[in-house]
Length: 464
Image (tube, rainbow, N blue to C red; front, side):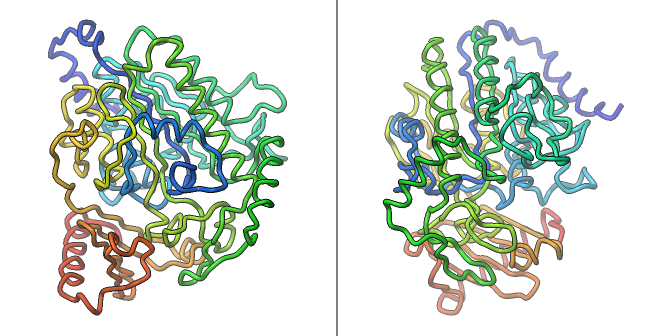
């Protein structure tokens, strides 16, 4: 009875009588490759001089790279909710517990499954407890997705002392030394091989590069030497309000974890090619929020997001601007780039458009399809993008940031620290590092965006 509304909604679409078998012959496969906490410059093709990422670089040379792509939030739960639902977390009224996605949500996976796709999830879910796992939200198979936001360890059996990766679905039968990023990749490849003759939607959601920082020894040693040779000042930082922002990519373990993710992408691409599926597969590569670069409490020991300001949890660019690369041979111009603003809520309607399935406009309320930008068609810039973070007292102390909201419209972004009524305005085209606050020199624009942001909060009934 819990899911009766959802079941009825899906059934109404299924009885239309479409011949899905005939449709499936031309449907493209979709692989959504999500990295946890990967910063905007955490690949060589994105600007890193430390991290070696040949597979990510190759993907960028074969597809389109978006320079102004954003997560819908600066923290994983809310960001992942938006990818799955096409809505900002601020609209989440169905669930009493933050981060729990109600079973009646018609998720992206539900829509793909309804459209004739085999659906697969592997990795980090973090959107609810048992009963609200991926297999309850439209995925045929769930590997390792549950309520935890991180593994106790990246090495099998993925536990440390009494603290262990409780009740992780389908991660038994591992072996000593098995690395989680590799295991999730191999499970994904197995699913692709088993479903090569039907359209599939794969959501590979790596736990990497989130804490705990653990990497394969040979890769870690490699980056210790690379960092040493680079001559960077280990641990150097600069103040961002109450936090310390990391200046250099100087963590060898994190660098090795990035390379393991890159190896995962390489294996996925190689498997698609060997099966003859590469030409008919859309690959979307992105991150759930910005790199964890602002040291406050236990946070911020991983990467540097420079030239962006701030990091994970913050609404400065370093916390929300993320990598985005999309490849679809024969449809997306290889080696192209776009400054079109994309938000995490946009993936749902965009994927629906790309694979030719009907939109779910009552579901993905906040998403805008950027299909036209992908396919090099005439397209206007998306409407304003919004962010909202009603931190509790515990998070405020850990992060060092007051409760905040933000809006980006065109080249301008306004951040409001709504507890105090303070706000900042930046022209991102001229000042990507958010160094020059224009709120006192361009008061008309600042107050117009401030009013628009507050109206949006009221419209979606954002919790304060």
